[in-house]
Length: 187
Length: 187
DNA sequence: CTCAATTCTTTACAAATGATAAGAAATCAG
DNA sequence: CTGATTTCTTATCATTTGTAAAGAATTGAG
Image 1 (tube, protein in one colour):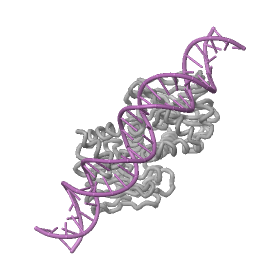
Image 2 (image 1 turned 90 degrees about the horizontal axis):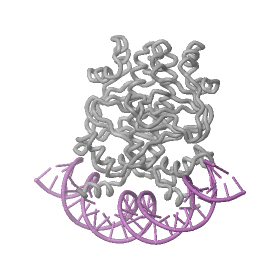
Image 3 (image 1 turned 180 degrees about the horizontal axis):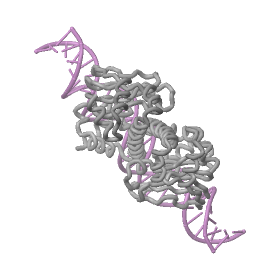
Image 4 (image 1 turned 45 degrees about the horizontal axis):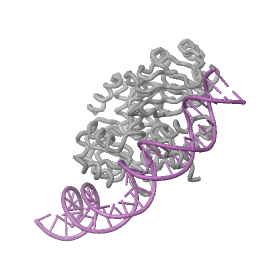
């Protein structure tokens, strides 16, 4: 879990006791390509850190598979709208490559907050950063053209084309695969 | 500041000392209709609670005024992407009605977090709830039709039509005023 | 490797949305 | 109240995006 704690250090450095407490509620899981890490319909009670591989959050709208977000190695992924509301999630998490993740049991994590204010602060800052990313994405979806959104995505994740099928990228951008093909075709 | 603390109680009940500390860094401001509470370009260092009135966060994209979000009485409003990143915001906050707000000085607030874990927890929960709303808005912008987004808005804010000009609602929905007129016209 | 399944592109057409302009309606300043 | 300004609607036309279908390219299972 070295890279997990290196990731944490960016936000808030934990005491050794706090690290031990987090280790005690975390497990390492290997997941095959295309396998669901979390199925649609369950309440989110796990926060994942991606050691190796690539995940997406997805859901269905009118029977069409829509990718809400991607997460790469050294990133956190969780279905926030379920985690913080306690409601079942209509979304699932699927791994797009053979992956290894650290699964942090969220209910246990939250109950560590009283004894370890440093842990509460750490996750506060992690989710504040996630909140900022999400607000910026709103701006992108609200008034940028599909082509702008595509170019912005390539800039922020240059290797995404090599790792993610275009049809998943299309729904992430809020357009159809055909529309994405058109955008790519016009040089 | 009664309604502010009633709002806080929904998330985390504060000790009297904590309340006093928050009162010490907060001021009540009256703002005229259409006046900017915060201009574009400044780094966000204030969190506002709306006692009375109505605000929007806005920015310009290609010289077009775009409303990112609205906030009504008994809600918090802040330019999160600046508040949590420390970067200047390209967005401003404008009041759409004669309003009264409680201005909480954010830098001072954050420095209360060490002495008052209850305050840190309170704002953690408030912003977690804001994060959830924002994630849900992504879903709406990503694959709901403009008409669906309009109907959803009317459902969640039934009085918005009486309080907000349609051109601001249009950009909030990610469409032009002409397009919104069309949607409204078709019954 | 080989064949089947999936993904991607292209084409043609339909639907939704944008841009522009003009007039109607509502709002605001004096 | 009155005239000027702003907002809203309507109409027309252009552009973008969606839908459906077909074929090419790629991927994957055996």
